[in-house]
Length: 427
Image (cartoon, rainbow, N blue to C red; front, side):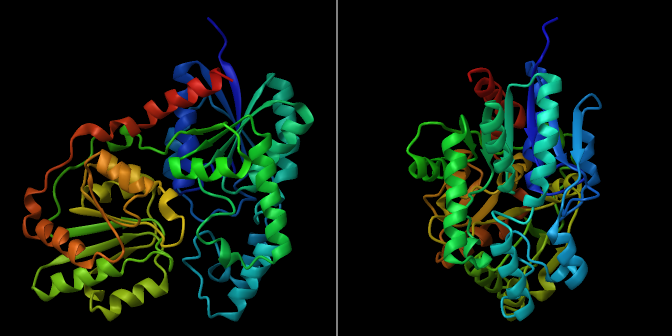
């Protein structure tokens, strides 16, 4: 029997960490062995990590035969949490940030200017040392680094320079173009340093994987090289098996994930206010972190009684709530260049086959995917009346909402892993 080709995957986020960032490479590692490639994982020891969420349920996807190596790390976010309380330490998306707070402003400035490119860079020296050992012991010639945190890409950069391995850099999100970049309060000097690091990574990597076409174009323009490949996020069909498909008794809108200040959902809130004035009954359920600003928005619209907020759920339980929904709310942050954003939740929404109502750029990547899969509708931020018309039709006949056809299956994790397999073997 032919020995499987070994590939080292370096990822900060790994179970027991929760969140969408974990699942991409967890699922690739799950299905690569079926295609003749043995993934070996290098990650941070959870005792040292500064995870935002814990989800023990994701461990079910780790094959007992998968080799997973863990190292210690130096985590300044843990120190800051101990000194000032976890609620005051800003994290990705800044849904927990009160921008009027002097303390949180200082902490954002510290995070943005003293830890470049991010506050997980303290893991790099431990990960680099262990990566060299693994590469030598298992005779590995291909390394994949995935980010964020983008400091992980600097491990790949150093391995490429010192060992001349084949290196694939995977970008789940933009680096210096991320929508909350300005909230890190970088000085001009730090911005230049950060952009220089980003450019070095893009130039030296043998291949760069991105999750969508718009991000591909943006990164290509930074280095003018043809090395970028789109392999999107997706959903695992196994996660959606044996689900109770009973429809909810009340019309239920569900949103999963973080809802920070940058998400403009005014059209949705206004439409819901108008629907409530007609006497219709409905629930707006949030599973994840909702910023105080957004909660105030619903309160001012008189919708507090319609809210059901669940701070966090394990992945499998959140999928169950998708099935218990009438429609799923998708929101894209409002800023210049947001057409590249394809949130990980979009693909789980597709996998649930529940209709989607989205707010964001109508010519963006997310809108194209929803349209391609005939899975709902994405509206511009200003299209309040159209949002209302779409919702009221669903509310008035929600017991007869039909699931979409199977056009979404191209985004299954198994099919996407086949694309990754071809990329690895062709290098």
